[in-house]
Amino acid sequence: MAFPRDFLWGAATSAYQIEGSPLEGGAGPSIWHRFSHTPGKIRNGDTGDVACDHYRRWREDIALMRELGINAYRFSISWSRLMPGGRGKANPPGRDFYSRLIDALLEAGIRPMATLYHWDLPAELDDAGGWVNRDSLHWFADYAETAFRAFGDRIPLWATFNEPWMTSDSGYRTGAHAPGHRSTAEAARAAHHILCGHGAAVERFRATARGEIGLVVNLEPKHPATDDARDTAAARRADAYMNRQYLDPIFFGAYPVELRELFGADWPLHDLKDFEWIRRPIDFLGVNYYSRGVTRDDPGDPPIRASRTSVEGAERTGIGWEVYPDGMREILAWVKSRYGDIPLYVTENGAAYEDSAPADGVVEDPRRVSFFERHLDAVAAAIAEGVDVRGYFAWSLLDNFEWAYGYSQRFGLVHVDFATQQRIIKRSGLFYREVARSNGAARG
Ligand code: FCB
Image 1 (spheres, protein in one colour):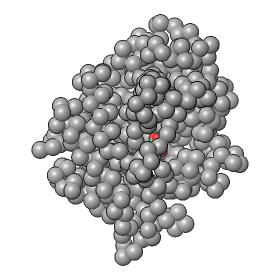
Image 2: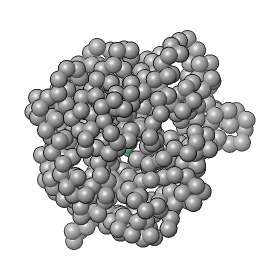
Image 3: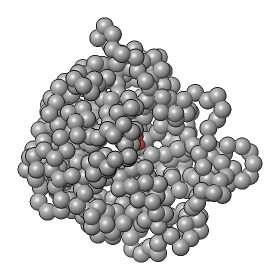
Image 4: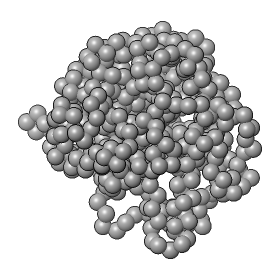
């Protein structure tokens, strides 16, 4: 058997990308609500105002999950639905929404994995400095505890953060994501406060809930574009920045030394006590894998001086990312060899393609089927090498709001017609159903 018994076969989503109704039931605006309503930030001026209307159609969506035969579902809790201004007491309609969702998932035999932060900071906290303000670690811990107290008896798997690198790099350094800042110094501070907030939330979790907690990182093997020594060094720097910046503090209690040099004056002085928090033991690590990073030396791109390049003639998905299945095996094996035998979940993996229109009740998406087949083979190969992978979550259950790309990139196992909200399972969804049903044996 390539996959262990009790393997989780899931699909993943996040709150702002699917829920819609961002201000319903007394919810407060998040930074993504604000950002998507700022002209010029999102392709086609799209917003998450309606998205997949999951806030109202969640029952239908759980029925779809049952049809897909998945036994796990990864979703995120919107902080500003649960605590509209980010602080204070829980907002009852927000709490009830997630409470009903969780109950219905459990009733359907679907194990929930809840992510506490999938990028949608309450706008009011951004006004107070967001992740650049050190208080953010306490705001987050208090919010986490509120969620643990509300749902901790029913959620077996918790992730504190989704992809902290994206929040720091795209949110604070390049500005492509909310809150849209452009400051290397802010990016370094935000990353550190997120890691402290993670550790503080793990501590609260141990005191208030049962179950398992970890975090979700996006990892990429960084490969040099050529065998020139400058590119090799650039790939190492890119690896320190994207991969090790987050995992070294968690597992070793220290940042990779080269980051301080690269960031120079923008690298903050860290209180050593923070690392006691950050390195609190976690129960699992979630890994999001989409592609590798082919990297070349680029003196014009501080602070890492490395940029992403593409391999000529490489196979790409519709969003332009190289299809590189062996990177999945490589990165899972790398986590084990560098950080030890921590249980892993692939918490996201998937592909955007321009799908053909639904015909005869199905969407034919052969390239996505092939993408999943090959990446599942790579997960199986990692398991065969002895990596403790316990589950796989396809990104995504539904076509949804793909951040700065708006609705232009479809990642779903299920097609969504955004004009009518009609859902149709794609061929890849039917394929995934067979995979889940056969515990991976039917993967092609
Ligand atoms: C990841 C995000 C997820 C989705 C996929 C395509 O970085 O976690 O929300 O946007 O990329």
